[in-house]
Amino acid sequence: QVQLVESGGGSVQAGGSLRLSCVASGRTISQYRGAWFRQAPGKEREFVAAVSWSGFSTYYADAVKGRFTISRTSAKNTVYLQMDSLKPDDTAVYYCATGSPARRYDDDRSYDYWGQGTQVTVSS
Image (cartoon, rainbow, N blue to C red; front, side, top):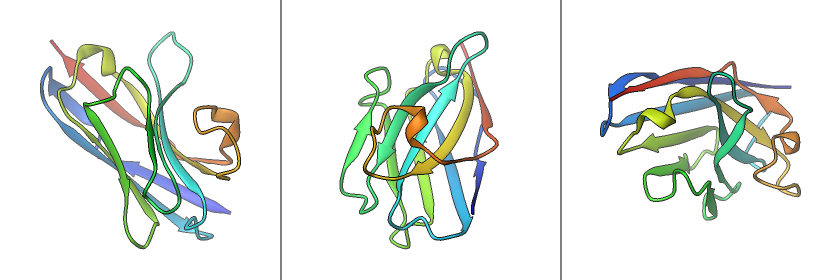
């Protein structure tokens, strides 16, 4: 089993920045892909960003490309999401996830383990 714990959420004004962290414990995730999804009120959960097990390959949703950066530590047990130039549309609960690299990176069904989520609120 893998436990994922997110932190770093909060409230910021538009244009501000936040850095989310996701720490894994239990079974190692060094060979797994790491990802962030988000869910806004009344909307379905959507893909935000993913990083390969090596950290060399990254993938982003069009809505966040150029503003968000996903990375992971060399030990590969922590995944970060640096969020810059935040917009009110980025307001959501952000979830960390990890799963096999053999599956689609932008499909939430590809991920086996999920964190509890952290709230991000961006005001205009």
